[in-house]
Length: 395
Image (cartoon, rainbow, N blue to C red; front, top):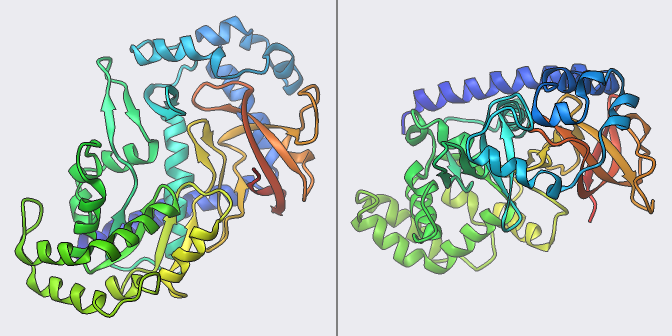
């Protein structure tokens, strides 16, 4: 572990995130101005795409025009376009460079443009690190990465995989100096015992200060695996194997911690004394399994729920520690909302028309080339940050 490199990376993470937070603070005071600018920019910059020409983007100058010319859409409306993008075609749904597809359900994929990738990086990654840093939770320990980073490349050069994993994997120049689990493990295919390798590398490294995972259950799964298999893991750490060099001292420390340990009790800060924060990239309602994870962690480990981000877009971002309530992002997506109780999509509301305590189905226009797309996801409005709604997932 090179503390100088880690310190440099953490300072860069904080700076990037603070810049994003400053921008968020500005745009959340007048979110509809950002929303209108977002739509007009999308229409202007994508007017010459195949989709834009078919839907008269050049004649759209107001939000009313936008709703009149562009119908509501579903995945089936984009399937043929996405297949062409996967084959390397450009200027189909968006003029922005599209070089990645995110898996969506079992056989479906959704495109990610360079700007949708940047939005994910800014709001679901950099801002999470900024929040942790502002509360003094970033020290010079390594990062435990439990994000699925496996990415496949199609013959066209377009990659397929989880977007956050792709973002982490692209920083391979400092990856092994910052992250506890090597990139080749994070990128490994399903034929490997991923959980064993994650546990092996995680246990070997004592100085971990922050963990990142797709969902909080990933961290819970890792801890349960360690509880069950720690004798074998400690033996492999002591003797070394094809993956790690021998480390008898760390193996003895693991045994000393685990031998008296009772299943389901506090363990995280014993194994990793510097670990103070777990960043969770995908969160819905917190279940009983989350309470078990909190028991493992104790009161000195905090959570950053980085926001609601899916293959359709980056919708919201974190404001506070240990709080699944996140704020909608006015410059990342154009939002339309159908009240949950409504029987049709005849009247859709904009972000400024939402009421606290009510639930809505989300329709989005995104930087990846989805236009008035029905997500079938429901959010409940629970508050406001400045003049912008804060939400939680409502199932």
